Length: 320
Image 1 (spheres, rainbow, N blue to C red):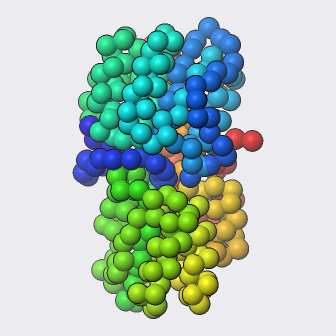
Image 2: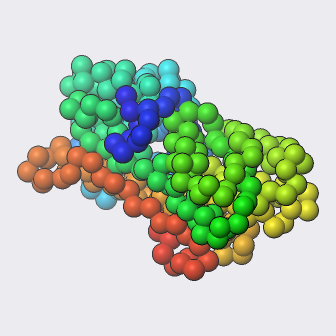
């Protein structure tokens, strides 16, 4: 399976964030649940309980209710085996379609095969599959582009100066790897990555990483952090070490992240709204189930590089 239609390389392992994607949260359901009674039933298998995943769940539930669709939800807690069990549970409920935020792109092959054998169409959020013939559709976030947008901001801000950059990645695997690869590939030659360590999408871990990073590289100019929750912890670590001038770029576009851009704690962040992803997933799934509606199989989620100059352009991240 490849994680994104426009990815330059396939990667494996956890999709915690999306990322955290991605690469970030409100308070996810850990067990199966239902919401809204309707003529169409949907199963939503979520990947984790970060801010991103909880906001995604809320968006899916609210949009399903808007369309009078019944929704069952389950959380895979970043475990591929649990994800497959959750899909099997949704199949046993005989849902009309499955929406899946996977924890592991390598797990998708088994997930898709299981749903196909049961005759239940599957719609993917954040990623797509290399062979879309067996998939109903996908709401895709181009994480390599997310990383590239942050790198391009650094390139413009550095204005040709030789600068050093630290990377606080997420959990090793698909979402984080794509973000970091896209970021590194887009950095100008005058920007040198001097440190690259995983923060595991965990603020406490990210703070430890940042403390070690700034000790080893006290002259650090910039840091790329794979989500805003970690970025806040990295900022604290840098400030405590007297490195308040290190500029941080990050990912998500949460309300808290945009506020941090406004007050200067973060210099830039790339917004990829969890609310938009969830709404798109439900609308597209329902539309694709009805072939007469002519809904596109692949929906590209819009990205916005948010700086102090365009704060008002940041999309709403989490449903109210």
